[in-house]
Length: 566
Image 1 (cartoon, rainbow, N blue to C red):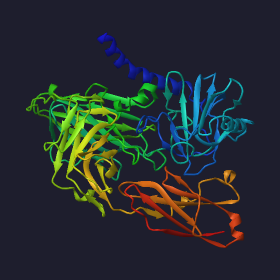
Image 2: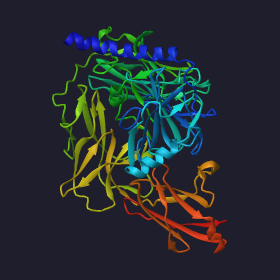
Image 3: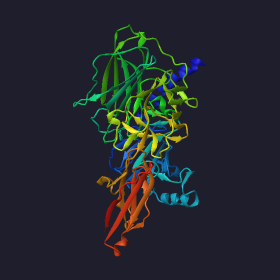
Image 4: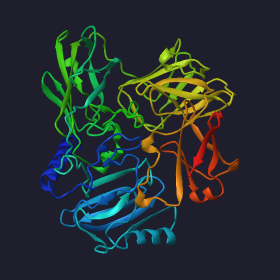
């Protein structure tokens, strides 16, 4: 049985790579670009997401709705669905010839060259649950030709305006970017941001990486890195492709003395891969917003390198290589020196940890845990200056939480002892990878603040006295509907909201000429959105608009005033 499991783990990456290569060879010129214009890729295949992996590609529509969406192959409608979250309005098409499905997500409507498609959507909404539906469509009821308009882009479901496209079949999901019609025209290599080294002997180091003007990379260290034991090496990096979005990496390699010891190429993934993102990424350091992707350079249940197998004090040359789908390469060399003087420090208790003063405790008994290391909780004398924000005040001691050869799925249970009755006082985590304060899910008792922890960083009770701010958005975001889908009798107005600390509560006051006025709050953009009838011009040439918002600490913004002209 053990031999079978070993062979399974060995063969799965090979099978995945083979499936991806077969897809690229078989469907090279049979899957077409899904739009009339060549828009950039804003989200790549296999990227980290907070609860899963991104199993498709996102096409950047610059915050605008209404671009025609084209069928990527000859096929037929397989299913139609709608949800306020996730894919939003979505259709799945099927090609019997290719035995492939294509999912188009976040659509505005189904108005294209196929008659009856949008009317069917309206019927499903009217007859079923208006909050969502899912229906399989009888084979052959709606047929499409490749490159035929079948829908229009939108922002239904999660995220701002974009098209989400997936290509898949019963085996799993395929990356379309290596295909002829999808390959980006890109000369920029990936960017390497940081390298993380963890040892089963308790060693942990984060190494910043600098990109030179010629786009090569370097690290600035005074001497070679002395380390021993079994190492887990991780790398943070991204690829810009043809957009300004930080996309995921297409291929990663780890070389030891010029020999490849680990390789991962994002060609093909199973649904199991999507559900086990912790195998590919450090989920406690990775972030979607802002984008920060930390890749594991080792296989599940394994290590990158057992450096103790090398001679004491010998040099080991470790190379980290990142590639984009166009073949551009970035690399960095780590100069390691074998130092096995300290014995391996095995942790006897893998489920509960506490600070030395017992102020903070963490419990992982309900979590799935990987690794044989530890979680350290270190009290800091003071917060570094770069973490300080005006009117965002430190109330408690600060504690640095780090995980060494230790990964957990889900959120751990924690307790921060002490009584903090002020409603403005909450528990925050400073994420040192994205350099931002994050509000921690927590609740107060008389003895402690109980909390859930899914990331590492610096934990402290902070008092949020920072007022939210309302401002005009950038010009590109002041109108995000093409004329074809715009309401001609309405004026759309957009106002951006930001907050440092507890975050916007959703409590928004909008007054038009001193009277409450209906609005929509866009949580993806943090926008207050208004629709104002042009017919009001008959009553007044200029209208006074006032907006005020509050954050979760009950801080009020200043009143924002605008004049609406027709």
